[in-house]
Length: 359
Image 1 (cartoon, rainbow, N blue to C red):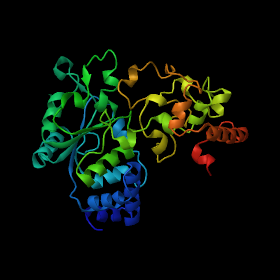
Image 2 (image 1 turned 120 degrees about the horizontal axis):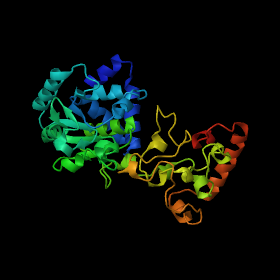
Image 3 (image 1 turned 180 degrees about the horizontal axis):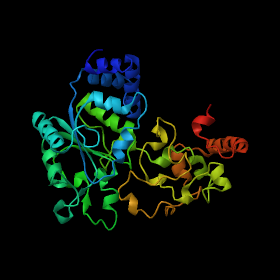
Image 4 (image 1 turned 180 degrees about the vertical axis):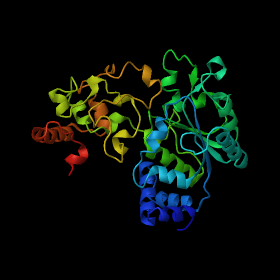
């Protein structure tokens, strides 16, 4: 296996074995067969780096910040070696007229072939005057760039669903990418911000197969958004037993009980946080003691407040059937609960995960 990517990675100290392992992990996370890992590696190693144009609109730069805080093999390193990032205001050295010239040249030279990444919502009020780049509205820039794109990735909840700018009363008239572009393949990668490896996985899939991964009814990759946070949460057994923390510092919270009654939106939020985690797999919000805020769902900001419990049954009797379907057996939950209690007695402030319990 040779190619420009392999040579570049070798110079950075990334071995062929590490690269293969990375591709195998991506394939596994996306529920692809084992052979797909090698197919990904071979395709990315041999492929000419595709041009990528990243347009930042009404956003906070959190999506870019998320990618730059990736783990080894660094996702940002993989992105910059796998692709030719020809325009990204925050990361590129050029500015002003030079930056806009680089964008125009990349679009012209790679017309019909480049991947367009958009983060941030697009304001329509006041003829788009709320957000402009180089004197041009986001609406104009998006339509121009979308015309020559092979595919579009809506990066983050703002681009995917409108996000915080669209929250009531939506003074800027913010909309999502899919609200404006109807004639191009679009994949939504929501999250505030999204998980870096999810973004890389989508790009790797496109580079390998020349198409976007299988999507759900909201345009999200099923491999990463097919399950709810609740489905994979290590606190799920306590939910099934009706054991809920009442405050963030009570005995239940110290025992690792379910945060449902404190407003956790895990039961209605689709994302891979519980399995992929953040900061190199270190932790995720629920493991850190805070309920899920539902940031990868449409209109999450208007969903009733972060600390208001969902108006769905929390009784273990009522959810018993659903728990069985999800594979959350109560017997296993009791066993896990007992082991958590023993560990909690030794270190009441330590957060215990299923991974810890299985050691």
